Image (tube, rainbow over all chains, first blue to last red; front, side, top):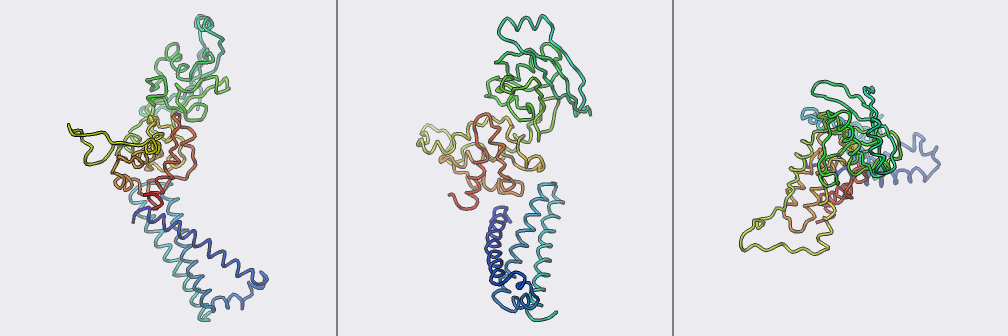
Length: 114
Length: 259
């Protein structure tokens, strides 16, 4: 993939994440902060499908943005074809693992499985 | 780094310079090294008589003429046109011929080879990578009808068209921008501000048709996206070129904001 496409994704995910984090914070402010962290309130968020979907999208945006950022930093630190391949595939794998693990949490909480 | 040598001007030399104007004496510290022979970098100190118009290059040449002719320094035009005498002067990349000792406001002047370049010897650095990256940018007008034939006519440009790239054509390939670039300090494969500014110079030229070829070259994992926009390249350019702006404008083409 061309670097410009990767960077478009990088900037797009950053903007998307900022917007969704703002929504997330606003939702927290709809009640007292301590109340928003009560167990039943947190679980209720996962049971509310639109909010659970938003969390899933936020998870994807942050994983893609974060691990691509890390990839860029690591590419600047050291060069070499093997190293660069390792970093590129490693970042993709880390993204996939984090998204899978986070999605599992969202799904399990949404379905009421503990 | 250790100081290995201290030389003072003879009374005869001092009196000679005194006849032409007010003379001060400064300490010139020159970084000496020869990596090919595994020689560690050291500083040699020289006491140099200077006048208010003496440039750093003249001070170095004074050393070569009177104290140590083996000091390696690259220079040619002495008027900031050839881009040969780039070096770090009191820690900042600058052209030695374009920097007056008096403007440094210091009695101790330290000259070192530019950062981010392999050192050949003393103040002379290797420009291979800079020239290679410059070539990769295809620094010439690309278009099918660019060959000069008896039927050829000049390509007309308006002053506004010219204004878009003119400042970038002032680049003298001195390498100061690359030396000041923080990305180049860690990423050896980075194209660098010099190459990217030259890519923009031709991309912005309305006579040129090679935009896509150049954008393909710079759209690489060590290309334009690795610039952090520190702006130090533009700050040190002795010719008023603004590579940082060129990089941002080029990004506009790649992101689809500019056509």
